[in-house]
Image (tube, rainbow, N blue to C red):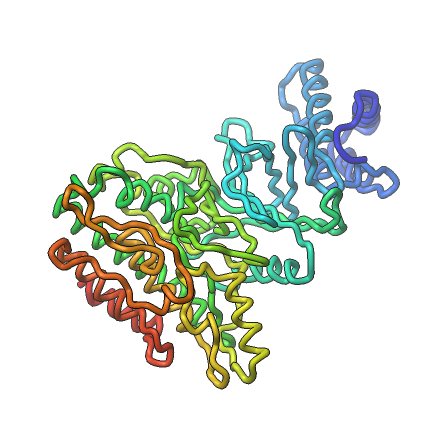
Length: 490
């Protein structure tokens, strides 16, 4: 049985459980009987982890001396059973109806209710969607927790591997600046109408991504007109501090033993920001780490300048956030906003692969280039990944190039290879988005005219240019970047 049960089904089940409780009396005997009956493989709609878990909770609640009047308790139990049956489907705890679904995550025991409409979708791609979920059965007297749920359709072995690798990566790379994966759930059989297995990843819900932060600050109308020197200095230090924190998270991949890894898809949309409010009050999400929170992709994040992803690059731009639009206090040159002092979190590990690749022949080169085209956003992709030369050995420095682009974007708003500086009618220098391709990546990094540069602009440009070495054999490593930024912060 999938979907909601009829009233007769609900009433019959309820009468059986109620009469059984009157007959057997002692709570431990009732719980044992309920466990056996709810696990019975002969009764399809009761053979569900979500139903089994909540059925036991209901029995416990009923059999304890709760002080409620008998008629009220019977009504409450009947409504609970009706709701449980309405949430059950073939996923073994993920039920769907016209309004949404309840997903049961077995390991954590969480049941998350989702509404699959445009108001609740955070990000959407060809093969996955990220949407807001809420605790389906919140504890009495506790606030309802919100989550970000990423749904993936595993349409081939390639997508199966990407899902498995993403789940493994969150536990493989523990770090305060790596997103927390709360749980993951995958159907054991093909679902209809997709005719493929469906996977769900559960994350805390963040305020937004770095892209949201940039849109609300440096890219917001009026920022350049009103930004003060003191704001610039404060933002400069925060930018470098957040950037070096993210570099340390990447270094967790780059120095992993016995095998080093690369992320491949570095960009602002894959850096979530946990605000100071979320650091101190985790009421809106379940944090999982004291100093972090947990990616893959997404208040409806801005697609401006995000480049293209194809094939298994499939993914949504994931900010795990319900926020949209400018926030109070942001923009107009102000920095005392919700974004100040936030913790950056690396997410979206679906593109992770081993770092060291020996390009022994042309087929290997073409395979690596195709994979990079699928997983790496073009404006953050290192030059050697467009056409890896035969005989070379790629390593973690393909990610370091992306870090150089990320630093530039963190300060100016966009990757240097998807933007240019122009002087507007008011005589101000501003950044504009341009098309990006292989030839643009091979060109020199754009520089803001010196007469328009602040001291902080010059420092960011110098650091970015140093990291963005075209010859990857001469490019610095992540450790070098961390040291250079720490020196700048002293």
